[in-house]
Length: 58
Image 1: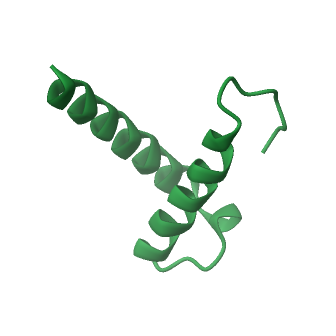
Image 2: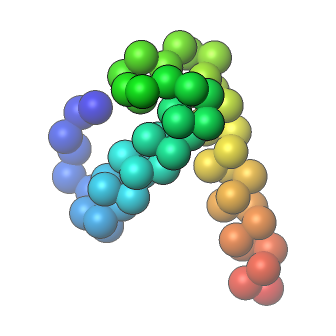
């Protein structure tokens, strides 16, 4: 993962933890071994969680 400057630096650690959780759900020990299909599912899940978060805040 590229080390770009983040607006919220804590986001990187949270995202890495999320990737590990998803990798474990897929039975993969190392998130670097996730296939592009899996990473697409991760992004889809992140979007879903973000949408739910926005809906619940209203």
